[in-house]
Length: 309
Image (cartoon, rainbow, N blue to C red; front, side, top):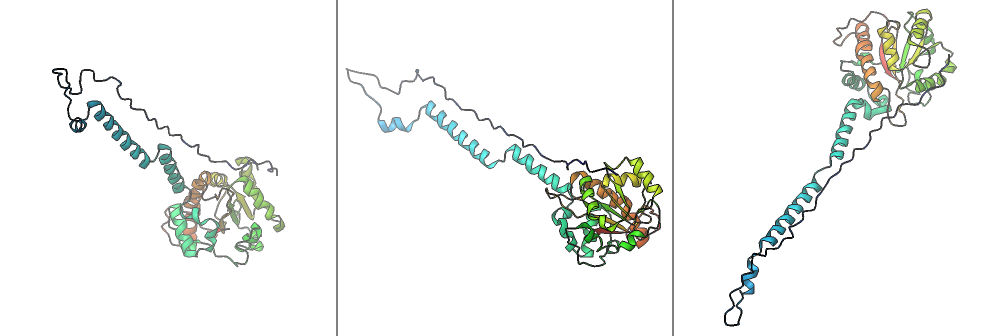
């Protein structure tokens, strides 16, 4: 099927806010105190008597006093502005904190290093991420760890499931393994790596047909593997054209793009990924593997486990 003409990943740019701090010049009144006479004594007998210089300097004029008050106020205001962050800086910091909070929590900082975590740690991190209690028995264990960090997706995939298992399907509409990827472009890259396996793969992402087209394919054809985006996979599960009843592995692609985002940390894909884990994968894990606090009533079937691939 077609699908090579794919759009690039969306860019999330935050336009910087401008902060205009307007400071006005305090102009002293230019009017002079003509009615004040500098305390000159009366002139008697042709001689003028003036006040002592020390005495006159000790008593400042009203104009000089007002000027010093204005200078002190201006200095105090400048000190406050120096220690007060601008509105644009405050808003930028708040925006960064908001983005950090919604982009995957611990998964954001771990990225591909999630593969180095223990099974117990993965379950705890995924529990915080999805808001449900994943247990260690819900996490998949690799068949071997020889190529778990390989750049080739097929090599990493075969660490978790064998080619023989992928070809052995149990139920229609339920591939043996489902892989959730960051974007349609990433799905295409994964499919290219999987070509040597010669498997029938369901392409569950935009540019590969409508939802109805993909629903018909799932209902009429057995697929050992499905590769798709979280939005499309979620829609097909809700439409009941896709099922996890015969699925053994629910795989999260650990790929990180140039902007350091993955399928579980990018704002556009994090929410549907969390919903997939909470509303679909978790109930199936609990019903087949026990444990947890499942109340969703998932269907009995193949033991489902979650893997970071």
